[in-house]
Image (cartoon, rainbow over the protein chains, first blue to last red):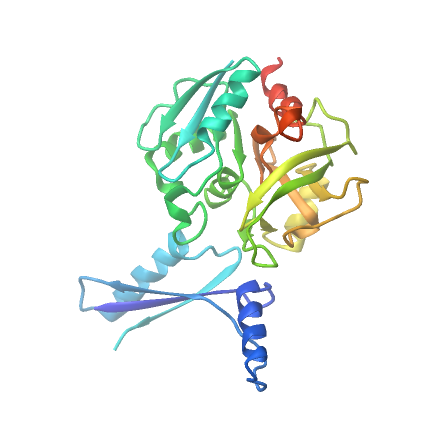
Length: 80
Length: 224
């Protein structure tokens, strides 16, 4: 089963990469852009069929390694 | 005095650091990341570089190296640990120091000499320097934008004397190159035995190379 962890800087934490991409989009004429956040997507292939267990497992990975919870939030979902 | 310099795959300031400590009279050993013995040092140094290619986040993977278990144990027993640049990032990821590093606000890798102000010298690292003194030490990093755990945590660090160095201009006015909270360049833990700074004192050891202000910083570890 593949599980996806999406990791982003917390709201309120300035995202310099998002800001730079926002400037780039502005320069290209995409005027409707309000805000851009750049994050990471980590896809993990787990040897289990139990979705609940898989999500719990990847959440534990986020807490311990994948995210730095001082500055980052994460969301975990099963990849369909 | 014995200094153990930890070397991770991707560390690149290990030899400069060894040279700098030998120049001031220390005996220096390199400790490879998958060793389990720190060899009974008086000081452990985590040098600068790009441990594990900065994969995931700077310092995030190095934290799980076998030797880091020993470093954490050593620090928790009161042993002195100094993290320079990437070493500082490893100490943050290991939770030996509070807070986290983000990309520099302007997204650039910044490599230049920078002035720093000594904020607190009530510790082993900066006791040879005066409070308010301005030193000139090179910086070279892309992720030096220090972010505290919270506003309250930052206030507590100030109250405890854990904020050690700030980025300033040559006159001592705040001059923040990377967006760091309160222009912070260096901090220590509550017990004042674990130190981290983004600037490179080991690159400021000879006036012919621009500054020798690093000498007094590193020497303070040697003096009893």
